[in-house]
Length: 136
Image 1 (cartoon, rainbow, N blue to C red):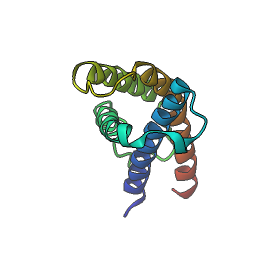
Image 2 (image 1 turned 135 degrees about the vertical axis):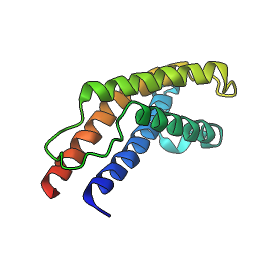
Image 3 (image 1 turned 90 degrees about the vertical axis):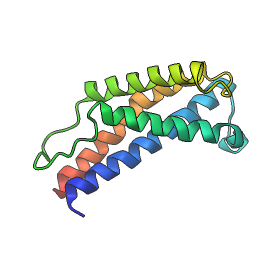
């Protein structure tokens, strides 16, 4: 596997991880849970998988997964990443209200997850870019 494809795959995996972590932390903030063990994963695991897939699709439509061949010196634009996260949060909010009505009390979780994922996705992308720049 060449380095640009590996870089793209690592970005994809890190984005899914960042989205999942941000929604778990959003849940913990909303319901004031102190431990990950006490989270009701049986209720929110379908929601979390669906939302992670939705966010990755929106990230792809926003152009965050374009293959960057011979552009090792170019970092992902934080404004573009932030716009993709905002769009994902907006569509998640719409999805929860109109399509996935089984997810109760998630409006605040989406807002918390949006704010956390703004930070996490940008940080993960920055760290991945630094690693890629050193090996490319």
